[in-house]
Length: 225
Image 1 (spheres, rainbow, N blue to C red):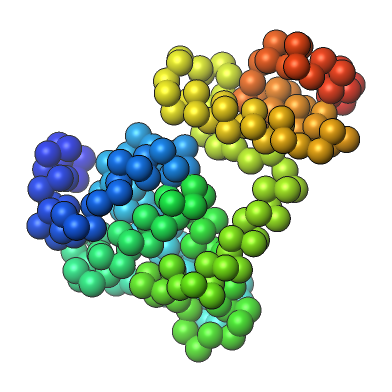
Image 2 (image 1 turned 90 degrees about the vertical axis):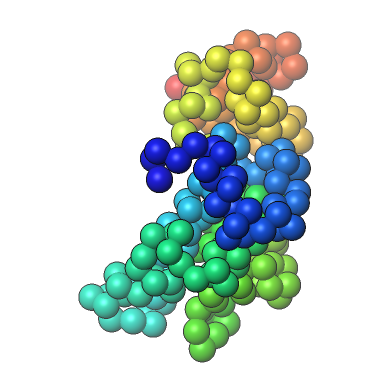
């Protein structure tokens, strides 16, 4: 796979996923989580598949559905490379990954949430990839994601999005705008906490970003140092 060119991947997608299911990928580049915006859709789906296997095994263990010694080997999919899965599974994983991209969330968080929601609702079996965009699960997930956003500053964990690594890439700019929007829209009494996270804790933005717009909140944030 490491030697595959973008053209090789495009050809594989046409033959194994189909052109009709690639509609909208360009738009998804604008909504998907920042960590994945440099990835070819095939690479993104492979990453999604790895996350699904890992989270499936984890939920099998943590929700008491399997002996912890056996849970490691229960991944919800055959233990084969992505390109060797059945076409039905490849298609389902592709569509599920697109749903996560549409919602703009990390793959591991999306999958873990959907699986744990089903487990708590006592599904007989944990959701397979084709169930990950089911309306009743999505409704609960979207509500959970909104609540999560309200508890912290949301942003990438990759060093590429830290201020010290800023090179003016458009994806970096989009991430900075995303972080800034959360701060601008925050409750006034909570804004200094988000500024502390953005500047000092997570290192997303420079102090100067807030000197003119939120100087008092920046001053409050600096007192935590």
